[in-house]
Length: 263
Image 1 (tube, one colour):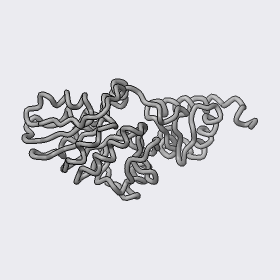
Image 2: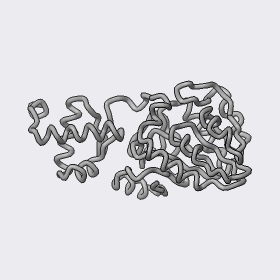
Image 3: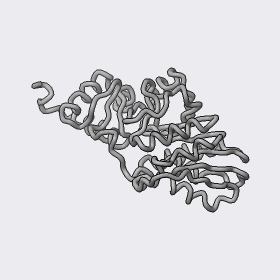
Image 4: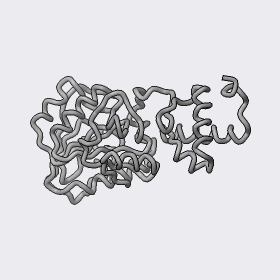
């Protein structure tokens, strides 16, 4: 206990500041990545994380740490859209390349899936988009080659999403070529997870309605676990993330059998 309360050295303080900045920026830290970035040993990083946990700055996880703030905390869509915005645009653009004319596509609610909707090529024709996101429906309103079907349901203003009751009724009648699903966490063991239980239920119905399943998640979601399990890694055909993803996280996900495309 005395060692955790002792005043850290200047070098340690600078490392603690750097780790905290990474945590605030990415939503998580990984020992191997921090050690590489700061040019120190993994042992040193683990000691730093232990100290920061004693100061209630973070909570240790296997191989890294996450913020003390619970993962069930949600920010409005307008704020999440500003977090890792460039990465989300790249992910959305890469996902949009997978859509072909004539496809029936399910697009889930979320800031990254919104970028996918915005990036759909204007020369696409005869595409049907089924979504539970009102902002995505509006974004596609003027697309000349896309017909938009809104699922219906009960409005969640925080995310402009439609959820139960009644949100999954239409999805039971849909046979989609691809479903693009967002999430709050991607973990090799826990799979894809989401913060909000009501939205997770809609995701289940979307997954069941699609022939091909693609998850979109920026690097801050990797190695995180949120409240509700959405699907195991083995259920998805692909994960699209961005080049901010740590090498260790990518290695572990691919080792677990996940095809990962880096935008």
